[in-house]
Image (cartoon, rainbow over all chains, first blue to last red; front, side):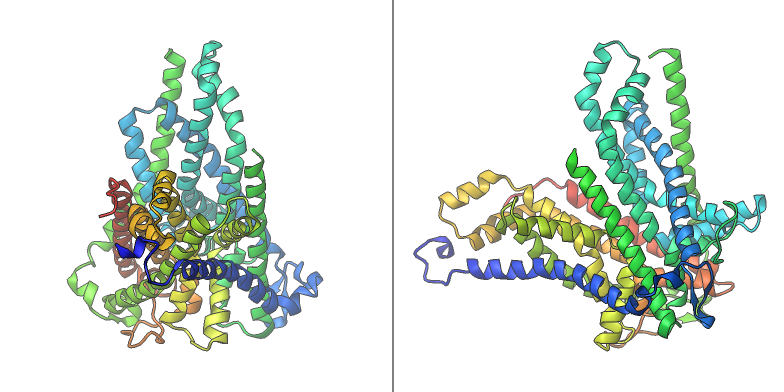
Length: 285
Length: 276
């Protein structure tokens, strides 16, 4: 073990380790900078004339690059997913912690883990083969904003529930004994004490999942119908920004390509803003 | 528990059950549609008629190559970064805070944006064209934050007293790292590696723009090649009559994903065997 004694004649490798690991860390940071730089540069010509991007008409062949309808569809489908996933996820998390038999809760947790590991394209395939025909039989055409919302909700549910579980357990540990000593029923203790106490940790989790839903591409592309329009109802087909990039990237050139890069830039900025909000909100508590 | 509480528990239990209907239906569909097509021939043969018949042999090879490139880049970079964050910076220092922000930012970037970035940098600027190499490099950027976070956690789990003992014995930093820290954190690092590989395996959008669609046997890393996820998408959306083969491919991908998940649990659970 001569390498560990101070009298060793072998060169001291500590500085080399420091330099190498610093290099790795800087590389990781530089990747983010490069992404920002490349996307801004590629969409720069269009970024300088923001007025032309606010229109609703997306017609690359005539040079009309209105992103409004697709941005709206992206936001609507993600919000719909949150609307479906957050209440259900919270209620089931509460059930798992306070009501379910322990063995059932463990099996359920395992199922959630498996759900999280299903690739998004497989969710999309399921949506295409099962969900869309099901919705179509009820309210044609089936491929719709609602289908996108449901598939997104399923995809964000597992991680949302993991984080809700952590937050609720923490607030139960702190506050449940005191609440029960005051003689409230366990349901009102959950509703009036535990949930309000857990909100500060739930908000960042919800924001992060919103970011994930906004950035999801394949599953949405496969079930949303891909018509560029403001949806008149939840059953209308829509095209999100991400789906548009995936659909048109293979043949876009010139200003069309710049417009796609600009959509990516918008998504990037939105995702970074949501992340920053979540971090600031999370660090305040 | 009074009667009202019991009803509440039952209603919530029903909701929990209803939520599981969707994933169960998913497994049922993929299994039911795919199992009829799946056999050894399917796993080994070349696709024919745009994938409607034949197999997925070249696609499995392309997927493996892309994963290999991705992980062989992400592992050294990620491990180095995690070591730097845990060992070399002051927790309250400005450098650490900046790096933490950058990592969280990188983790929040949507996958389709990584695709645009990879297309621009690797496919166009570096001139690699649609290739396995470009796809693997872009994926490496994507899984980097996930892998770093996993490694960081594993390294931070090493008790402070070990470091103090090592310092007391005048062991160099490198010696401490090699003989104590890394062996201790190995199971956690392995779990992070497996999870990151799973994330890379599931990715589609990134590879559409960087690795391309070609389904021939790949001959070099500069060849274009489609991965399993891309094949599923293409068969389901662009090839009429492709859905049985698509479901069978999805079954294969799902099988890999489940194995990876179980592996990660198993490794993560493993009792820490210290410094073999």
